[in-house]
Image (cartoon, rainbow, N blue to C red; front, side, top):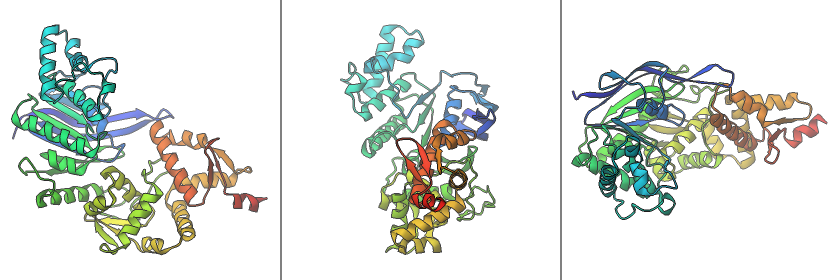
Length: 441
């Protein structure tokens, strides 16, 4: 077995919630990154993947467990580990050359040597001729190349890539991914191991020697899939499609929490939310679109997830959020990597718009505690009006500010569609529906 470079042993990380209590982001994470391998890390938003990378890079410290680099405890940043971020994180007033040289300058390298090293990497990454350009003069793909060049110029043993291709269009992302693989396989870069955080299942299968599936709340490694296919891999090959199907199955399989028993089957009864939980970032149009697609030929109520992904052209992250929402509301369920309509889901597809809204609202009250809590508050308040800040404050006890904002936005969209309440976008006030107010009068 190849030599370990970075090891995480029972690593945990907590952040402080608004009430001062510790919120667990990572718990009991065990992971080893070895020489000569590319590992992909997949998981839903908020599962702690980026936090894990930052701990490995030494940018933040673990609260529990041990992080080892070459067998020694890691305190602070290590020279042999570099990270490429999703946001390009370039200094807008510096040229391409100066942005790439920045880390070398911080190390006190002589100007001539850092210029030579930077020029070599700029050429390697395909940016020759743009050394004097400013970031605003570059396309998104070129700006990300600068970010990658800035990491590679440090000649890292370990390259950590945090959704480095997700901000790019599909073709640009694919081309850049292929170029990184070519540099890796040809030995043109000294990097000995790469860890890629991604939301893109195909990207993970095309790049990695191992795919890790991360669970959420708290984040931890839930499953691992070794990939022995030789490089280069063809996205359309049967072997790659089978692996993509397997990853979908692993990502949607029951984690054994909340009464699921680890059966591999997720049904609407197994997804139980608490009041302060995240909500899937799923829009009504996407939810109904998938239900209608499922009900039609050739699916007739059951479909393979990769096929649904192809038909809808949703990203993997978007699709998984929509699936979670449909499962939560009892409109669909998953088994063995397939999505199936429930009996309620079948009735929903056949219903007219008014009937759909009524069914949707009923499911929300039964399965989404946050929405039920909002409705209860509106009923108890004589005015029938409540400021959104009241609910944001509640959510911040268990979620970060950004997550709380996202959860409330989803709750408002869903609740309005289910005709459970209205929302004034100008004042940020949630209101009882007009009919309810008239009935109270």
